[in-house]
Every structure is written in C-alpha cells, then in structure tokens.
Image 1 (tube, rainbow, N blue to C red):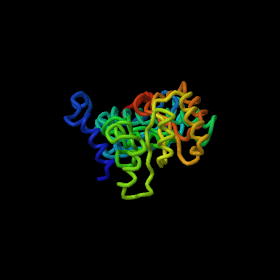
Image 2 (image 1 turned 180 degrees about the vertical axis):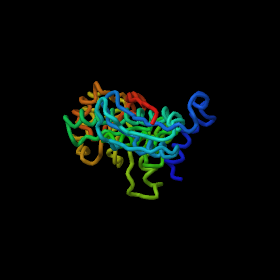
Image 3 (image 1 turned 90 degrees about the horizontal axis):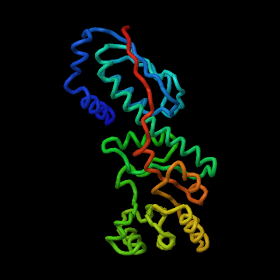
Image 4 (image 1 turned 135 degrees about the vertical axis):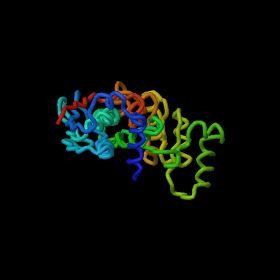
Length: 282
C-alpha cells in the first residue's frame, strides 16, 4: 500500500472503525445505490486523487467529471458513484471532509495568486508550516493545486534560520557564517528570518540567499527593499514577506518589491468548500 492508501484507510477507520449502527439497523446489507457529490459553491477542486483512493477502498464504482485543480461551478456534479449502499454511507462524511477542506485551501490560494498576479506576475504565493498535524502533505498539495508554492514540507527541507536560532547562537551574521561552515552542501541555500531593515541588511551582507521579512508592516518592508537597493544587495537575495498577510493587505505587500508572499491563513483559516453527497436506491 502507498502512503496515500494508508492515510485514507486511517481516516476511514477514525469514522467507521466500529461500524455504522444506524445504517446497519436500517439499510439492507445487499442494497445497491447510486450517489452524486455536487458543488454548492464555486471552487478550485482539490482532493480528487485522495477521495478516488477512498472510494476504491470500500469497493465503489466512480466516474469523476472534474480533475484536481479545475474550477467547479455551483451545482456542478463532481463525481458519480455506485455500489453497496452501506459502503456509500460509510464513506460519505470522510469524502466530503477531504474534498471540502482541500478545495478550500486550493480556492484561497488561487484567489491570492490572482490578486498578486494583477500587481506583479513574478511574485509567488507560498504556504507555511501552519498545518494540521497529520494533514500537511494533503494541505501542501492543495496549495500547489491552487497555483501556490508549498514552501517547506518539514524542518529538513531547507535551512531557515529563525529568530529563536539567532537568539540562541548570537548575531545574524555569526549564525549565518556558522551554519554555512557546518553545511554538508556549502552551496546550499540559506534563508534567514529578520524583522527590521537593519536585520535585512546584515543578513544580505552575511551571505543569506533568501531573507524573510517577518511581521513587518508594508512601510517597513518598503524601507528594507530601498535600503538593500542603495547598498547594491537587492539583486543578490530573494525577499519573502510573512506574518499577518491577509486578503485585505496582500496587494500592498505585492507592491512593496518582494519576491515571495507566504500566508499561514491558506491552511489555518480557509473555510471548507460546501458540497453535498446525495444517495438513492439503484
């Protein structure tokens, strides 16, 4: 079994592990049924691959009308399923939860990408590690389906020096130099989190490849960009902004001269898209 197979089985076991007492008492064991999942609002659909595995695991036939990453309109049928009625009832809520949650993330990401593209098509939207434990890979995949960059999947993905690292080890410069000397890949990229224009200048001079301007106002970000330009350092680094980025201020940050906008709200605050699973006798 693949990791996705195990994950879908785990989700199903969580909801159906001891059985469905209501359906077992009401629905004949051999009853055949047909079902449809239909959208109740427009969305960028995500979770098709995952739910396909889930439906297969309970022995249901499926015919999808959409693919991951496509825009689905209100009232559109996402998938038609057929098979055992009890199996369909067993998987109903898990399937809707996965599709709704992942589609919510993909839809929010696409909205952010579209907003920023109108300002500067070169600016990338990225996720963060503000994900639900156990769901990170699915949530990161939903960001990709929405047109965003998933950023780090885990702490080993790339070097990202944060404020607590600097607090433990000393100055920005000494921390960058120390980790560069210790890295197996001396040419590997280093990202550093700073919260002032002074910190951005020190990070750039010390050899950072990416500078994350963390929880800085739009005005402070502009000041940091101008400072790096004056020092001839702007073209040597990629600039990322993170912290407090919302849909009501994302355009202003896109205009401030950065390369990447990372948004925790894509995963920790996106609402699940509304859809319904209707079942009837075959």
